[in-house]
Amino acid sequence: MKYFCHIVLTALTVLVFGSCKEESEKKEEVLRPVNYQVVGTSDAQKIRSFSGIAKAGDEIELSFRSNGIITELKVTVGQNVKKGDLIAKLDNVQANLAYEQSVSALNSANSAMKTAKSALDRVKSLYESGSQSLSDYEAAKNSYQSALDQYESARRNKSIQQSQINYGYIYAPKDGTIASRPGTLNANVSAGQVIAVLNAGEQINIMVGLPENVINKVQTGMEVDISLSSLEDAFKGSVLEVSPVVDPNSSTYPIKIDIVTPTTAVKPGMAANVTFNFGSGEEANDDTLVVPVKAVGEDSNGNYVFVIKTDDNKVGVVKKQTIEVGELTSDGFKIRSGLEGGEKIATAGLQTLLDGQKVKLQ
Image (cartoon, rainbow, N blue to C red; front, side, top):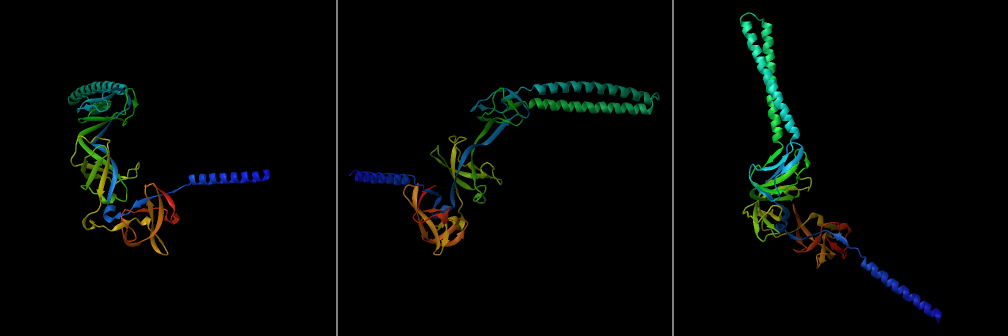
């Protein structure tokens, strides 16, 4: 009897641990992440939105042209300034010392030049009366020319040293508002280091970075739609500048957009969403479905895609769907049959997906 009870207890223990292990395995189920895209028309593929940021139309970075310690910093963030207002000042000890030395050198050169001129006049008078030789006259002329050259050099050096002193001051080049002030009082700064940023003028632009696959479709003057998350109103915009060089920090091409109807409600630094319509001319009003080339596979039954069936846009099940493709365009394959607009399709890793596989959307 005891032996029988022991067998039953052991069996129950195995069943309990087995079921717990199955539950643990179910809880630890790992879903494969998959990239997807919603099937749209040819026109829909040509309407693209990109994130941007509002910036002042004339944003000026203020910096010194010499090294030194900041002894005066007259502005704060958000302060309005007028053209010519003092922004910051350096100690200028070295520049002042060099200027004083240049003034002393100029005075000495001026005195030497005057002495040489008097000597030349005297020798010239004696030479004309026959009391001085030609070589003495030529030597006096050379001495005067040398003294004159040294005077001109000293005068230019004084002007340069005066400029060095001026480089220790920053004045507002235009009326505007201080947007930021990285500089701090008593900080030791170098030439070119930004001390403050001045937003001059009332015009606000939107800066957007576009990828290489659409940059050639953008031209100056192109109209766009602008929306800002902090404002309810939508705005029309016009492309002002298209950079031909990629920004190494974002790997995108910077685009500057002008707000056609500006308002004081748009402030620098606000996040914006810019919508471009790349469809035009005969291509407009094309309701043909288009899918990316990378989303289409091919097997013995023809072309196919993996349609993702999902209810929450987080987890779904892939279904292998045979399709009939048509013309290849710059946006992808046109679809003749097998798909409907609005369906989600996988756009990567087709060779490793299985029909009925559960995936995580990303």
